[in-house]
Amino acid sequence: MYIMATLLSFDHFQNTGFRPAAERWRNMLKSDEASMSFVTNYTIPFVERYKDNPWLWSIDICNEPDWVYENPECGQIPWDRISYFMAINAAAIHENSKILVTVGLSSSKYNVDGSGYEGNKVSDSYLQSLYPNPNAYLDFWSPHYYTWVGEWFGVPFYVKPYGSRQGNSSSGYYGGWGLDNSKPAIIAEFSATGTNNTDRQYIRTQERPEQNNIISDFENAYLNGWQGVMPWTSNGVDSNGDLNDMKPATNYMWKKYGDIIFPHL
Image (cartoon, rainbow, N blue to C red; front, side, top):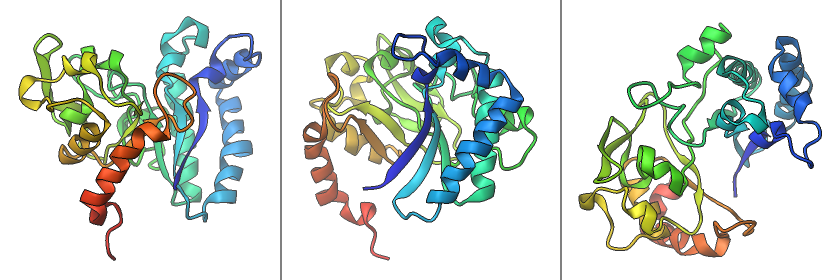
C-alpha cells in the first residue's frame, strides 16, 4: 500500500463549530509571509523526514481547494492567493526531494483551460506567473469525480483524460475530459460503490457499459488512458462505500492486468 500524503484540505478553511481555526488558515493564504512560514515550518520538515520512505509516492498539497474559492463558509479566497500557496509548496517539495506533487481538484472545472471551463488554476504557466520559479509545477493531474460532476463535465472513466469534451448532459459526453496532455492523469477520488444510474445518463450510448459498476469503472479508466484510480473511502464513513465495495474491482484488475500493476522489471 502506497501513500499520497495530503497536507491540507478545504475544510481547514471551513467556518464550522468543529473548525475554530478556520479564520487563521484563511489569513495564512492571504499573506505571502505566512504562506512561506507554512512551507518552512511544515512542508520542508515533512519532506525531509519522509523523502526516502519507499511507501510515500506523492503529495497532494491541498484537497479540493475549489471550495476555498467558491464557498462562503470556506472564505472565498481568490485563486491567485490559493495558487500562490500551491506554487511555493510545489517548488519546495521539488527542491528538497524527488516526491511527486499534485493538487486534487474536485472536478475538471478549474483544471482545464478553454471554453466551458474556468481555467487551469494549477497549470505550470499559472503557478509560475504567481511565483517565478521553474520548480513550481505539478507532476500529474489528479481530479476527483462524484455524480454531481457528470452533468457538467462527463464521467471520466468513459472518456479519455485528454482531448476536448464532446456531447452534452442530455445525450451524454464523449471524447476527452479536457486535461492538458503534458502530464499523466489519475482519477484521485470517486465513490467506491462505482457509478450509478444517474452517472449512466451522462455517458454517451456508445460508451456505456452493459451495467455500471466499480469493475467497469476501473477497467474503462485504464482502457481510456488514465494512469490510475483511487476510490473513496476505505472505512465507510459516508454513503460512498469502503474497501469491500472496491475489492471486486481490485481483484479483477490484478488478475487481468497484473503485469501492468506490477511489471516484471
